[in-house]
Length: 251
Image (tube, rainbow, N blue to C red; front, side, top):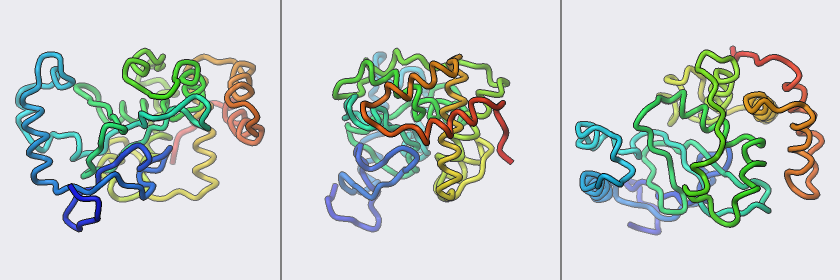
């Protein structure tokens, strides 16, 4: 491992290396030679016990090094946070060929596909979910705190589920590193204009609010009580515009 960049090395991310809908802030914990690190990760995974996070995967899956999570985009979140920050849950889809250290835990998927990942990412990055999280999180987003979060479970043929997948999938893929993941989700990849990105973020809040069966008054309350002294009016107006109309589909 090196704290200086090496061309053949992969970046090692920490929590500050990513932000909401930004998979690369330019901050690095270190750089690592992938050959020995991949070997170490694979050996560690193969030694996994019945109580490990890998217990639900097949032996064939675990024995194939290319199935290590770092070879594909994955959802990570910042462990260090607090309920007085502007946001408490900072989750993001990381690019492939990136290592992470302990302050950036991530999700494993023994079941589900990229669309399920996009749905979860959309909910985690929404303001309604973050409002809930702020009632329980103090300094760390541990799995003990995260696991009971009330994630809505609409069916895959539900327009709300489909629209959350579309919005989150599009927001999560700013460049070609995510092209294969974007294709699996069924969205385009590439940079978004500022106003287009902002409008999608507003719509995501609205659709997630509908998934929680919030009323308009409850949604307004979420904004009014989210952060003391914050100027939420413009964002709330944008969210309410979408909240009052049926979910649309991306072209």
